[in-house]
Image 1 (cartoon, one colour):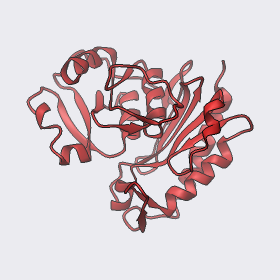
Image 2: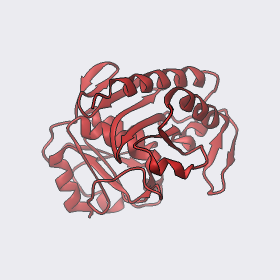
Image 3: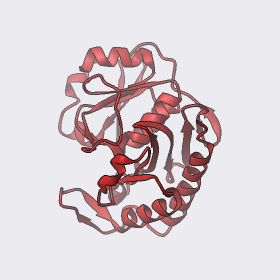
Image 4: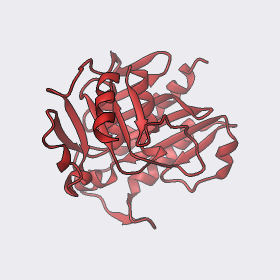
Length: 256
């Protein structure tokens, strides 16, 4: 299948989201807590509506962090899995480690995706057939073969909880960062070598990044060393590992 048209919608949606975000100042925005304790802002809700208006067409499903789940998506062949603002905590604090994340899933498999970091001026786009671009230029995962000199992106909160202390003796450099989607996009574009998290994530956190890493020549596995089938009734999945194939093999031996 040709996913040029969905990718065009993704690019249009990311551009509209970036424009809408100009009305907000990261670090100076009020937030409330959702039932699960996660923060949400006016920007999260606004972006959700903008993305849905541009992306969703008749016959397609929708799964978003900011939309009440509609089980009818489970019967759809094509489903949008989005996080209007991944890294809301960083957004609230004014830390530039958040992004807009859009994944297009067909029969459970991500096929097209886009991730935009307005503060970094970076837009990552890709399809499984055409590969990945960063700001319009071709990009791919690094070709590093081992941990020596590698950069591995870690969750800010996991670092804070001490969950990465066990890896401090490894020969790779650990770099704390917010949004998991943005971390995966950076790995896909070869800006960093790997990222992993050993705590559960939701499909909207990782669907777009999963596609970008694979389309850029990398691999992603969940904490059970399996490839995710997306658009599940329960969108929660175990932690994941993302890197080029050589580094992923080493991470699997280290973490799983």
